[in-house]
Amino acid sequence: MDKDKQQQFMLQKQKDIARIDQESKRTHGWYVRVRFQGKTHSKFFSDKKCGGRYSSLLSAIAWRDSTEKKLGKIRTNKHLVTVSNSATGVVGVRLNEKFNRYEVSWVTTTGKQGKTSVSIRKHGKEGAFIKACSIRQEKERERLEG
Image (cartoon, rainbow, N blue to C red):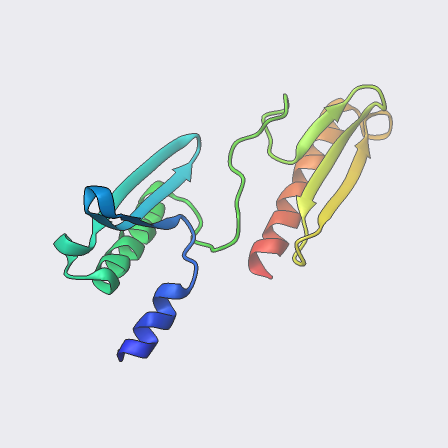
């Protein structure tokens, strides 16, 4: 690959990879951080040890991709949320007791917020939860494939 193409490639944002240039500590390279199921896996790729800025980036990308594969994480450049903040334990699904429903949220293929809800009165608590989780999975699949 010629120098111009290498330069363009290095300027492209790589998910989970950050450039570190800290002159005071003579630290130059790429820092990779893969987060999955509440755990973080990280590694630094030094320009000096890898044979230059471009080579260290290629090493960082290869490590990120193989680490994700080993962990069972889907390889995508799109943002994935893997830890739930709701009491249901399911990302994008929360119980709204005041309105007696499960609320489902997701990010659309155009990057906008999508929302719907499933009535507990209509489906029962367990049925509504299962339906809400199914909707969330389908919307996430659409976003990742789109």
